[in-house]
Image 1: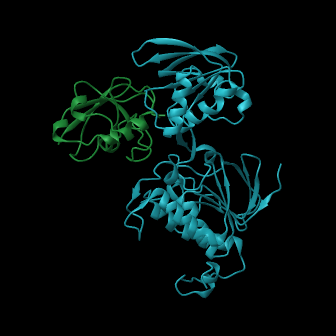
Image 2 (image 1 turned 180 degrees about the horizontal axis):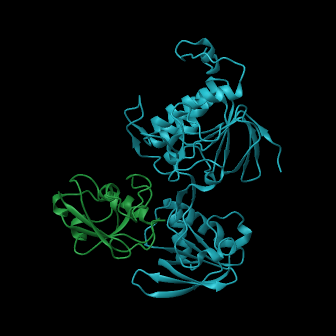
Image 3 (image 1 turned 90 degrees about the horizontal axis):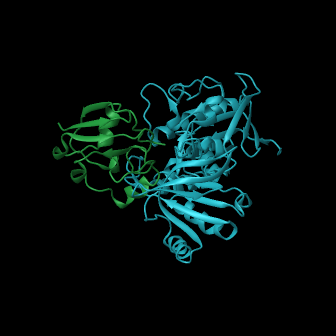
Length: 106
Length: 345
């Protein structure tokens, strides 16, 4: 099963198993990762599962869709590597994915 | 202060659970008023996912959030519920006894209700504007920083900065530009999700030098005594720029906060209201909680569960509203009495 590492805003890393076909947000919620709220439950409708995709993983996770970019307008401290974790589907290729969570989701 | 509105039940929240409660109460001749902080019915369905399909409403293989709300409004129409939009229930004061509950309910805007039961159907709480985490912003809220425009006069002749890229940001840019000293629009990217004609009108104002548009995010604020003087913008390239700003209006959408529900004397468990699963009543007799805001062993946050909870709560509320009447269970398929209430017989 692919593994994802979440690094929180204070620098603490947590590595969890993520099922192929689920989303990075779901892996975070199932494992009680702090700093991910996911208020809308994965609908790309709230921008509270905002993460930063660390190098060099951005090429594999791809770019945010137009709708996701619109939702990112509601997030804080948005960076070029910002994504909504509910919009990244876990694949075998993403085994080892490394992301950082912001200190606040709003 | 306005006159007290007397009714049987005040429903806090006009989301799907609150709306369907009107129906279940109405079948039992119980009148209700709904209070919701949003300007429209539907709660999260309308606010978070109006266009998104829902697949787990019994009898609807697929229905959008807004479609479900529209149907519920049609379904409860025969009971003529009164809606109080843009208002939040702030306080509830018990006036009665455990056997004969009576409450005084006060809402923002000064409305006072007197009712025999309350249904808290507040979902994840009330929708409130998201506040950007800019250091020290609280000191300016209400004097220089506003999350909505209530009175345009507050902005006349001022250096106004609006932050955001949606319809609220664009509409207020266009509406306030003629009366302010200088208007600056800040957005994190040069792409706006607002209505195309508003984007076009905004671009024309920029092209004609009538407003300033900056791409970036607000890094810090300067001012004193609650009076903002300026802000520092961090551009997409990381460059910092100082901008004159006496009034700041950030539009970052809405978030759900539990809000005043926490102050009503109800037991809370992790920001949820515990209820029994027979009547969905809280620890305060006469106050019920249904939908996403309640909790009990096995609770699922599903719309269909909220419907069931409202139906059972209505049975108990009938005893409070009509203590001397015996309640006979009836079906809408066969009861001419119920069909009359629905206006179909």
